Image 1: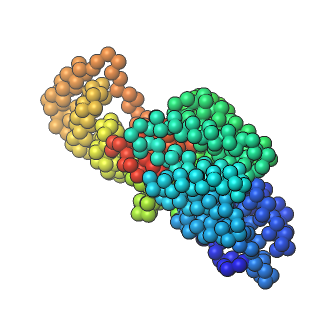
Image 2 (image 1 turned 135 degrees about the vertical axis):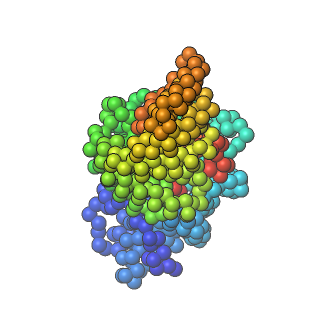
Image 3 (image 1 turned 90 degrees about the vertical axis):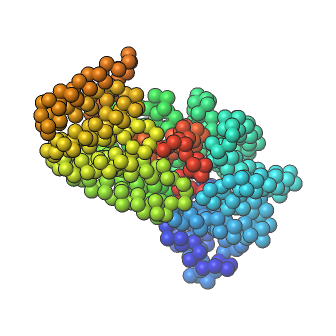
Length: 552
């Protein structure tokens, strides 16, 4: 290596499995070097590890990387940064850009500088302006033959990605999305004639994937065409590893449009034998997405397989240093799956781990996931209380339900606070505390009434009457029963109280870390959030976060 030791490539995370891209690895340092160059040219996700092994072998043999090779190695290493290591990506890209310039690779230098700009936690207007300037320089270099079509298209794609990440923060997101789709269509037209080049084909795949994402909320059918074409482009390049982001987006859209069996089949294929080159964060996301296939849908994993998938998601998420959000989601899903199957003790242990991990994720959060953290904490606490009921500990269940109910009562949707207050009351009743149960039922009835659900309010009042009878006698209970009859008389046609079961209420709690805006994507590949959280509209910085943490 020309100026650094191999330690420059060791960031405390080894994010890629050493599967099919590794093969029978040579021992000769120059053969390792040729292999790293080939993987980089192919856009293989294991290129970062290949460069590390090549650099180490060369250093031990007394050799070194040229500035151009060093730059490619730094790019590949930065692209592999996940979790806490992500903060190292921008400096690595910047150093790679300087080395590319020294090597006369001006197009590559612009790509590295664009990636350095986009690698900040909250890319805003200044980053977007800088990417616009880099795009103009790349286009000019391409006109003079000093940047390849793939390099130019990559810079333009990164500019489009920054625009996509900020779509929901503008004054007219729909109009801005239409303008971005037009720009992406021009980019596809520019790079498509160069698809014989592997690097250009990779950019084409990513451009179609992004186009599919920003099209999905407005025209799902057109988005499906773009995403299917993106996957076809990926396979046409002979790449044995799956295009994880394309798969997640396509299957998320298929689930939303009812094609669940096809979605499940695609996810299984991506998780199959050829998936060994997928980064562990993406593999965790694929496991979560498959386990998420709706109940009763063809292709849905059976109970034991679903638990196994979620356990695998936990293992892969834990291997991505610092990606607390993904670990929390994986553990939360696993804990709920275990609770649904009556495995109360196992579920309780996993949910407590999720809450512990959530506390760490909140402490180190620089990505504006506040609403998502709160929704995750409430969901974990509520299911932990449900487990306590299953274990025959109604007193502990009541305390757990009361804690999350107090937090949820601040939310805009009062039904969640009402449901959790009612679950608190039921647990208190089971624990033999009729006075406390009666008060909790009264609180639930008030919340149901404020939410406009008179059927549920009447149900809570009838339950309150039963507890009042135990605590204070029949005369007091008759007063509450009369109130329940008056409340039932306020029910309008079509006013249903919803399912009164605990499981139904818990399943209906808000999803943690859902799509933060109409054109954003969540960890499962689903697009089209409302831009609101449990406490109302999301903050501007939270809306701007769309990529899975760790992805550059």
